[in-house]
Length: 393
Ligand code: ATP
Ligand code: MG
Ligand code: MG
Image (cartoon, rainbow, N blue to C red; front, side):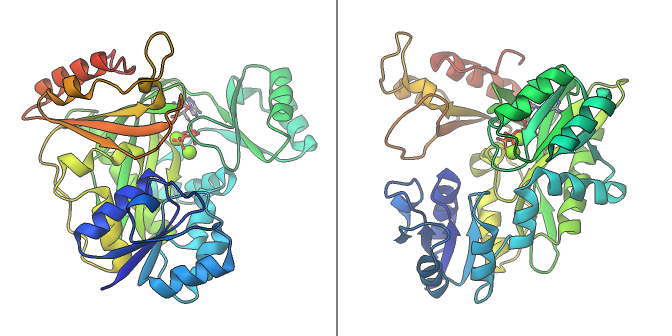
């Protein structure tokens, strides 16, 4: 039987393993952590670093094709694997997505095709560039200074209002390569998942609307009417053209801002992309006839990519470690009995041994016959678990 491989052992790898196993594949996970969510459920767990040549050789030897679930996997590791096995997505596109400077340059390069631009920004890699931005780019303030590499869940970002704050923020981030982005007046955020095969065929899910709390995804709204149809169409087309332009193979998630109409950058603005399935696409497991992980398996293994169909409206609530602490800060198991007594609730827990504040422990997807009942159940579940982010529905 064929084996599919994945670099990284987190929850995205775990859900990939589940999808691959359902199709009868064996799986191999390369991940240094002995107790990782994906390693625990995989047939093979190669417990070593992502850059260990012996581990990579073993992975290649075991697997028919290899993917990644961890966006900061060394691009070199993908390149090494690609010498002997199909690797999707490829090292070059993952390297672009790993670096905001290259990512934004790519968005700019295909802006004519995609019809969207990113927020106005400047690159700051040297003291001279910092000085130039302080002198000449007052238009970027107030703004957000973001490290070019390794940031996620709002980490590696500082909001700045003045040129002096900018200098302090750059020092605070270690004077590493950064981009300063203009702070835009957002009315909403959304993301689009596309899957592209080796032959260039592309399928996509409808855009989901995302609510972030403290820089971390809290809620995803996935149903018709979750955003204005014209914007949804535009986001979808933009994501597809970005995937084509990259020559991407696999599942790609593109995040967008919806900016206040009438403001300088009103409309749709592209934020960033993730070269893998995405937290905002977890609802597809329970609400669609093919999930983002099914499509990841299909794309990398060279299986057909049928257009997925969403059969139920859905809301996904992210379950951070915070939920495991009661009002007095005591660690305890959340009240799953009450949550699971609500209709259409699908609880996914990632098998992480230790709950910590801000740590992604699982998610809860609510499906139902119509949007109104999904919203009602989501509100009840959120209130039972004291979850934020549902105030506006
Ligand atoms: P992820 O976990 O999605 O990879 P990240 O750490 O890479 O997140 P971003 O997506 O760049 O960070 O930013 C996190 C959040 O901060 C965004 O979802 C948005 O809510 C807010 N944000 C980022 N950039 C801007 C901007 N230019 N204007 C307004 N809000 C912004
Ligand atoms: Mg990011
Ligand atoms: Mg983001």
